[in-house]
Length: 400
Image (cartoon, rainbow, N blue to C red; front, top):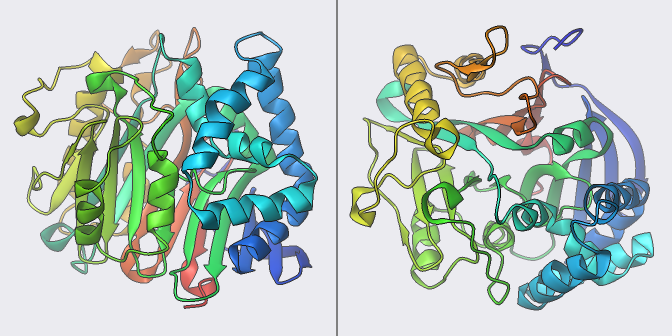
């Protein structure tokens, strides 16, 4: 992380340009895109403001998957774009239609690029899967009793390298009665957003659940990541999310950490059901890449299973408990500095949870880190090796 102050917090926003009610700015190394209006209007704003970067991401995906003959472009659209497009709600189809007008690309191209993280999982069906870690804590552990969360998104290294060029933080303010929604991702991703918060202070993040039950992907179901993003337009509480999962089946096994201003909740989501367990520690929940609710009857395997899932989970929990009762956003950001590998000692695992440097022989890295304070509608994002923390005060951007 040479020449990068990893603990600095940047708040300065620089406006770049506007288009028909939408605004493109820069905060740190990320594009900040503010969209307003109907979903078609927001899509047109986004496609116009981000056209060059969306096309660049498409070309990068071609280089990563098509040139090495892992997947053809037609296969990508056939397996990802077309079935997922059919399953998405009208608001998303309107969003894609506006994007298509703004960029000149096909709608199915936009549907495919939107699902680019699922593309990585599809290409890995018989190989490695991603590792992520997330924690929420509240009540007796925090300075003010409200909820704070922290998470590492650990995924393909090339995606982290994309972030300084094409990383984004998008804020959507739909007209009508829907909540505003904001989240971090890569250019072209408008619904497959795995770290997002709405104007009611409801936050979620996703971890890969394949470490417990395998990497089955269903193409005849609504994509779980995109559907959850759409849920944020409509839901304001964790209890409402539970009722949604009572009525739905996911297309991919996942672990979701959610938070609202006064509490957090982990969801362990298989392709046939889910659990929403009670906190495993006082006022704290932490998840890696294994289901640990005993009602599943599935063993919580010790490390190195599921990319040292237990080690990452136990370390994160210990560090937060050690900081209690003084956990706040600053304390959570400091906790995120621990490393899972000792680079100076043959990359042997140590007690930590973050992969700052590239692992030897390939493998995943920490693409980004997110800390949130739902009560204040704030998210802090860091891209390891490329940036310090970027603070997004969503009260400044949400219209409702």
